View 1 (cartoon, rainbow, N blue to C red):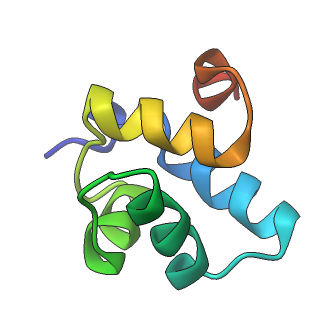
View 2 (cartoon, rainbow, N blue to C red):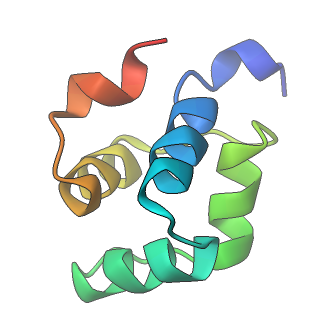
Length: 74
């Protein structure tokens, strides 16, 4: 997969770091929201090895309490 297919990975990692959250903490927050995601999936999204689904983006924005378009800003 080309890295340019994943536009949100670095931003997700940055938002998580700014909040002082571990990947496990974010995954726990996402699972509470009923998002089916594991730490491995999140790690692959952040490292741009795989793409985030539209559902993942919606849940992640909700967990961070930001508008979804924030995930796509550089």
